Image (cartoon, one colour):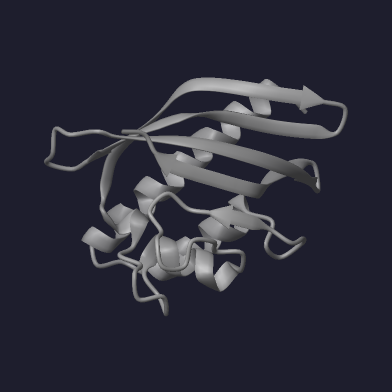
Length: 148
């Protein structure tokens, strides 16, 4: 496990967020898509997770699968606007760093989020710490915050 698997994972993660937004715009079943996205990319079903999404204030941490889904597509948490529902036209990975030691995999970098029909890009710093599950990786710790 190394840099290439993390790069592939990040490509899958950003494409998943974009696809949820497209499904929402098209009136498709975006909630099921979000559940599949969370299951594929986060280890909620296998382990305890620490998740601090980018835009939270009232309930800062979303350490359950239900709370994570709420953040991405709106749910029971009143401040959630549906991060993945924006929708995002592109999400680019930038300034990517790796920490690979024995069984420890982590990445830190920035993501550049560009919404449809808007020129302004939102820059977000992220840290993902991964866990290996069945020969693939999933997020165990996710921390992200806007860069101003």
